[in-house]
Length: 265
View (cartoon, rainbow, N blue to C red):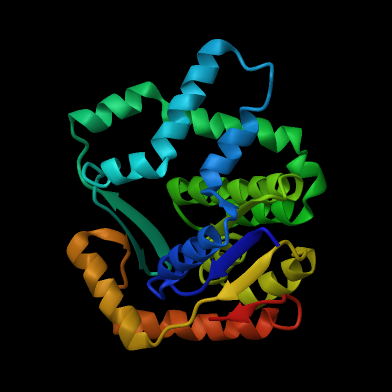
């Protein structure tokens, strides 16, 4: 199958596994692309796109390309995600002049517009019952609107990607935090999480090759400490929080193992 998805604890090594799978597929001469590139390229096939928008989309492709990512790594803002009292918090370093220039171009807004158009084109809200139910559950989360909007966007992006890959069977994609991982995130935030899983699990169809990335707790703690020094990605508050998330994952596994086919790595 041309869609590969990883899930597991933060700092368990999902990105490392993703990069390794990416390299292996490349060695096998497979056409493998990042999910945003796949979505933008698919959208560009629309012959009715106006010339001005076409140029913007080409700029968007460049912005998300591997070459651009390498350059952006030198200029990107420090961003961290933390979980305190069952609430998700995002923090970012202050914007500099070159960040403000990028904002003025409106590339992120352009990408959101693509997702919105493809959502309607694929009739996601009508045909995908899981997505429809998940949207309602996200709205009920006792979290800030920034996180809820991000979660909705991540789900939509994944659903659209899968729909595209059903049509573009020669293209491969590896996602390090896909649908199942996001369901696990919600599982850790909802009070009646067992009933939440039992209610939605029947709507999770087989949509790709799924892998649970495993790692020992000390290794996760080490990676989290490295992230803290770099002020990057999700950071655990302490070792006790890692243990709590690990125990949550074990419960989550028990609830999904008879319903979803996945492998452990």
